Image (cartoon, rainbow over all chains, first blue to last red; front, side, top):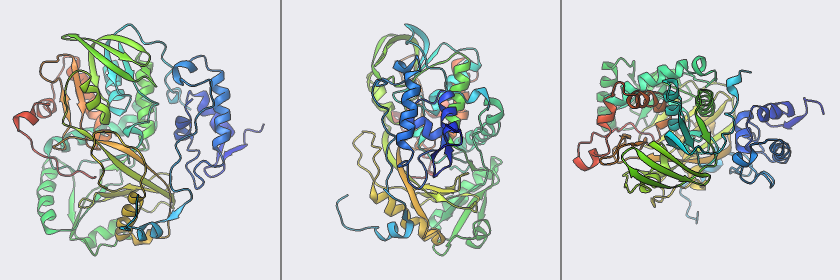
Length: 104
Length: 395
């Protein structure tokens, strides 16, 4: 596969970038997210999450220390924490909701 | 790519014994581990309950400033920012320090009187903070709506760092010097065998040690309870949002002390900021996101920067402040427990203070100079009632 293959189109993170992060030892999905910036753009990981999980799963299977690093290495890597809002929302829309009387 | 960008090699099993066990793999614990190892004391195991950057050290806004109301904090932060400036060359990791200054906006005359005193103190310490009129503030950030403000203050040497590489830089450098870092290793119990003799029980086994450093941040009261100590600090949720990226236009970090609003533009162009929102105070660490934060934050941000109204929020997250009653940290050994060291209660500014505090702590533990901060920040001050409050706290 070409190393220019894009994993995260929002932040222009390539397959080579993710493989490099994994090669440097960033083996937790939250670490890969923070090191490469993938999943932090407008779609917040909706396009790159599954690919990254697969890449990490393969890497963890090849890592002799995986039992220490990731106690649940035999299962699929968990996704990174979803961050609200579900889709980008303008500040003025959010500001208009201030003080609204509702359950939260 | 430098070799030091590597993550530390996965530590093997916990050793049966170690000189020092540091509880908490945040900036404070890793910074102290690095500074101790640099002084030749590398028999250290750092225990982190999740992954590196999972706690407040990976969730903060990255601000580093010298503008404080107590001389101790002003002087500590002058030194800390000097260390930040050398961090990339010393540790081989770019922490993206950008000294664009901090601009504080003031809404009332009462606040201004307080500010005049703190700025005079900062000037005496050699910090070039200036009090500005609202019109002068506009020269630094032309997009501000200054109508509700009576004054501002600005120190061009304050700045912002990118927190994650800071943490990785310390972790990698400490690891290369022989420190063992254990992620996903939760402390479940501590036996006190006597002075300087402990057994730390963890989810990965137990380890005997001479010294424990409680660097667990918002989790530090829970860790202290394991040795029967009640700490007066408590966790408080603090939320942040990030917007879509904009062309770089905002030089300083801007803050409104009365509401706890702060925001800056990251090197990626996002507006990143937070605001104080009341929270339940049940002693537990809460990291869930709330709609109320987005609303309060957006309303106050647009009051100050109406030009951002169409800008979209991409994400929000939360991290725990470790709040001490007087805004100052809690350091040193509690009475009657030699070998158990505290480094907690930093109220949201532990990240920026870690470089200097880590150095002071390593000096102390290696028998060197005892920095006055250790006498000022003893746990016993809360019992003896000798507290001077730090008031320049955001959030």
